[in-house]
Length: 554
Image (cartoon, helix red, strand yellow):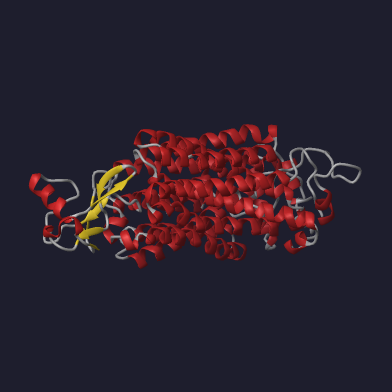
């Protein structure tokens, strides 16, 4: 018997045993989400201005008439969003006798508005003005950690096993998370964040692969979507913690220390039986499956394994997808959609801190919107199809992001709510598209190159994640009203482009999926040679093909 046949036909695709392990191994997603989106708070840039020279008790808030007079003679005024405010980076160079022609210079000390945050990494390391680009760099380095972690820890997982890699990732996750709270400088901060990003992907992939290798093919789509709600739970938790904990050191500790509890998974979850079988440890693999059968209330056959149990047939290289114009275009469109989906998903998440209004309210609304998008996908994915839902989500979200330019450029603060609403619609579309593209892409790649195809897609997503912080922070770099609209404008433009290109991809719902390169060439065409509707088949690939959309988020 094939391994998937054992799961589907004898053990039960998603029995009581798998559900228990699934719940336990989805918990790392909560901690992963908290670490990934914590920069919204710990790297927030509060309102600030140059510190008054020689005034040791200077504060951002005006202390009285004398303080205000001193500010008016020392700090020039500028206009932001139609409102006059004191310049955040310049101070007068000469005294008041210079009149209207006074010269200014950049300052090297600042005071910050602490009405929202007691402190952030930005305020402690003075990552403002000429150093404001360091925030984008810090977030980009975190995303680079995901890329490197997926490569290194993925290899380690195949060598030493899923469970040891999971424990290693938990230790690295906790250690780097706690260490980040005590980072003395920018270099130490980004190194720890890089390692934390690597641990996030190792933590998530190792835990989820264990349980997905116990779930039958018919339930993998469902299992792949439910994990998204654990991710959302983590976002709600970090938002609530940030509301009550305004010191970034304490917040970082609050989201890192509890992850120690994940070490309890060592006694609660098994090693992947599929991995054990691939290493010739048949007795251990069989013991796990028979224990699962006992919990599920079923009886397994006397003989479970033979030499063909893990034989998934012939494999090909991803380069074979570039051998015909049809496959080349299809592959490039898939890769581009992965890049855009990841870039916009993370970018809009990080951009919440740049929107007007209350940051905590905006973050919570964004989390609600993301949760609703996953509920929509769960109910509509097998009803309206992958193509319609993915393209629709991308186009609606992209157009909404582009539309924000009108209230930003032609409206004042009274239309701020319109900008936030349009941004949330964009977030809805990006979240839904990011969840759908994994399932859609996995079904489009033929079986012989599915592993390689999904690996290339995952790499594209990582690149999108690395780019997203720079686009999200365009507003702080460019400045002005147009600068405020620019991130959403860029996100919207690339999303619409990706959505339009995805219209050239064939629908996969209720179609017999392609197995060979030749099948892929005619898949989706009409006529005698088409790979026509046959039966509802498994929605997700098997064995190493578990680059779930949630993995990309970590």
